[in-house]
Length: 260
Length: 172
Image 1 (cartoon, chains in turn blue, purple):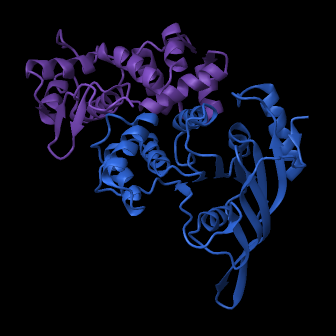
Image 2 (tube, helix red, strand yellow; image 1 turned 180 degrees about the vertical axis):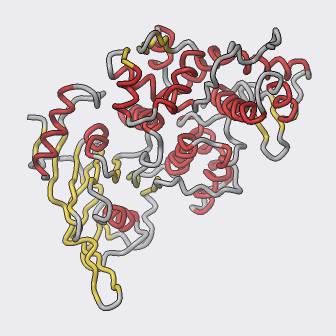
């Protein structure tokens, strides 16, 4: 059985999301975006949050990194309540969020400066991470000169240079063409499985079940209106995985039957 | 009428990003190294029009062979695919160096004794064989490949192409 539903992880918890609600007021009504969401992330786990658009998965991610607050409930990081942006996390965005008038180098540097890291250490980290993600040679390029794939490499370098313990990614591959996204998925996995990341856990939001099963150790499936977690599945498929083989497709089918 | 030093050799423009070329190889690898081209396009939900330049580019670099309706990874392509980030760059550089239009740019830089050359000069040289639009597209591709392979650099502010410095980044 390659899909398990009970959690038997004995590693330390990195993140605890506890009974999180998020509601917005719109005219006279309350819109419930997230309803009673609870889950934990353990060390060495790559977790994917999957759900259709509008299920609140991006909102949940923003609450986890501390860019938004829950209306009710709480998020604990290593046992401590998250209040304000959590410096142990970094976020990779769907649309790269690069500053157009800054070069690749400067875009990566900006986040480090904001965290008060001194110049020498900034330089070391920028050089190191640009090389790791295959961007050496692009230091002085501006975002508009780069392909989507290269832009997202900058997004990765910028996040990784912060050396986050928990790397969070919001649909990082979904604005890329299918060839480019395949390439970046595999490169990220190589860094992850090769233990080359400064990161102990990864949380990625995606709308694609295939992508979630390809990348992660655990898939949390969300429903929409209101957004809640309906399944928590462990993917036991050995790596490297192949999206095009039978075994993989069987698991994809299994997951689809579970959620339909 | 083509000149001897044609940069294109009558090929359709292989204007593909490096990531797309690698992505193509990875997907082919998943499929056992070989696939029918229209089937590949369908399964990727990619237009044949968008896929063909990528296949052409991979072919030009020697990473795949396309024959009839099929495409297959070469040994060289596998060697590239199995490399780590830096090894891939090196293999890509070796392959790209022999691509006529990359060679042209490198020759122009050499003739200029390694000093930067204006982008305009390269476009002009390309336009001996290509339309203005094609030349722009090709230069864009060449800069993308050149930067990845660290064969050439491009300074957007000065609109100049230059030779990257040898190993200016400390290796640990």
